[in-house]
Length: 395
Image (cartoon, rainbow, N blue to C red; front, side):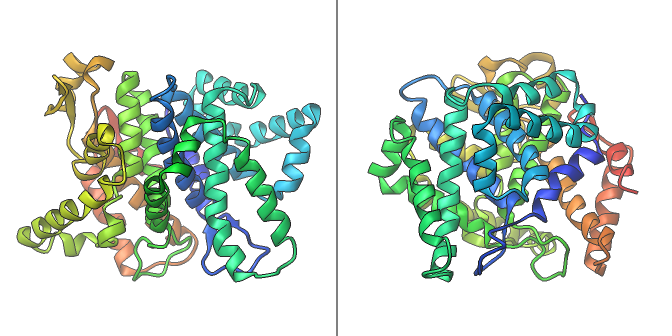
């Protein structure tokens, strides 16, 4: 398995793909943001469902990646057309074959196993738990977007039909215990609303860029690449899962502080500490929306995101990558590679800046960021991944 420039660019295409572009929109809705919100929703649903029956977290993570990749080549299809095609098994198979052929050059370096799982995913039944949770999350995140579209298009063409279709889609999952709990306890929907607001916060907000990316979409990019790099180095199952969800939640505090650019954060140690302390205090309100039994997970993902840890007697203990590789790369220790997540975070920042300059929109700040990140990773390997060599692909 090897993650390269072509695959990263394929993922990043979702940042340019507009949703609801046949309707008046109060803001831009992109496919990357929608998929990020969906995966956060799927996490919440899976945590709630896991109290009643075992959940396969790898299936949820990889299913989300497969669905995002599929959308990068099928996103121009209207949902009504897509669902009609899906209802005909032969036509759906032909569509999936075409989608795979389009994606093959980007995903083939990830290995035969990944490609086979990708193809098998769309041929398998939709009745398995992981697929149902992802589908329920899809409709929930779509409804969240639609509320804004409906307010901007009162009485608009198809608005009533779309509302009915989304509601029907959600009702198919009312048998899930997790959906019942979200409906019964508003604090869960409050948490998802809060996470959704991260799509309003633009990265590099003072600098013109194409495409513009949100904090929410950036989080998903980091999560997916952290997961795939983990698989690339042979990380255990628990380590892969922890690295993915650390990426998915690592910027969650920014819903309270906004996206404070690095030069401001690093202008003085005292200011950096003040910002971090404020984040921790405000995040306690967010944790209060979640079950006490898994608040510690989100706290580790969101507050201590760049430390490498293992769990000993139920408590996180700092370890180096080398120590994890040598002695703790086992599910029982629930390891997490914070250094890898940090490197992926900076890789995604690099891709955001590089993509804009490649599209003809540049700025001194972007050029400086590109030079700084490239220089800091030249000849450097992090958690077994040669990031310097990977950045060279973006010459």
